Amino acid sequence: MRRFLFLVLLLCPEFLAADHLPASPMARGIPEKTLSGIDIHRSHLKTLIDRFGQPTSYKKYPETEEAAEVTWDKDGTIIHATINADDIAYAVEVSGKPSALAKTGDGLMLGGALRDLERIYGTRFVKQGNQITIQWKDGTEMRAKFNGPRIVSILLLAEVE
Amino acid sequence: MSHVTFDGQTHELIVRDRNGRVVGTGHANNRTDSHATLQFVPDGTYAVRDRVVPHRHGRAEDTVNGMYGTFGIIRIVMNGHVGIGIHAGRQSEPDTTPERAIGPDHVTKGCIRTNEETMRCITELMRNDPLLSVTVLNNRRQR
Image 1 (spheres, each protein chain N blue to C red):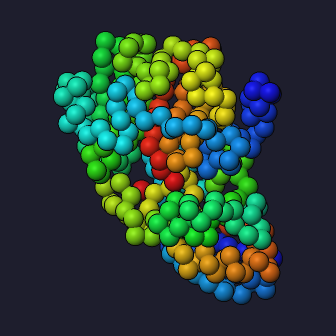
Image 2: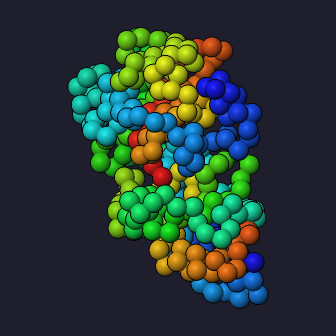
C-alpha cells in the first residue's frame, strides 16, 4: 500500500509542487523542527555564529529580499540559513559532504536513502523529479533532493502560507 | 458564471457576475516567500477548482488571522501546482519579511491574498453564480 501511494504521487501530475497540499499526502506526526541543530522557530543568527563561527558568506538584505542569507562551509558540509526580520533562521538547507552536522532532529542525514526518509517521516509526501517534499499540517515543510539513491540536500522551512 | 481578475500592477481583485458587471473590488497581492515553489502566478486565465464554495479547513484554522482567513481558499487549476488559489488571512498579523506586511501583502507560498471583504463578496456570488475562471494580468514577482 505504501509503495502504491508513492507510485500514485510519482505519476500524478497534480501532485508536483507542494503549495497547499490537500489532507491526503500531508505528513502525520510532529513536524520536524531542527536541521543541523538549528531550530527554525527559535535559533537566532547570533546563536548560529556562536556555534558555527564566522560565516563563509553573509548577505544582509540580499536579492531574495529576506533579512539575510548566511552560509557556513564546515569541512565541506554547507549550511545555509535564511534569516527573517525577527532574526530567526526560519529556513535552513544543508548540502555538500555528509557529516554528523548534516542531519535533522529526527536523524535524516545527507547521504541517506529513501527508505531512511520513509522510516523516519512515513510515506505521506510529494515527489517531484529528484525531490521529495514533506509538508506537515502546521505548514512546516522539508525538501530532500536526491542524486540517484542518496540524499544530497535537505531544506527545512518554517510555516509560510 | 462569475469571474475574478487579479491585476498585479494595481494590486486589485475585480469580481464580476455572469453579466460581466463589476460587483466588487478589493486589495490583493501575490507577495511570496523566497522559498516558494511558485514565485508568482503567471499571467493567464485559470480554471477554478472550487467553483461554488471555497475549500475550507475548519473553524479552528480558517480565522481572520489564520493562514487562509475565515472563507478558506478558492483553488485554481495550475499545471504542476496543487494548492494555489485566492484566500485572505493574516489581517493584522505581520509577516517576518523586512517589510512586516499584513493582510493582502502578507507573504504566501504562491497564492494571491486578498482581504476578508473581497472573499466574502466572491463567496456570496459564487454560491448562485459559480466561479469558473480567474484571470491574472500584469503580474510579476511582487517583492
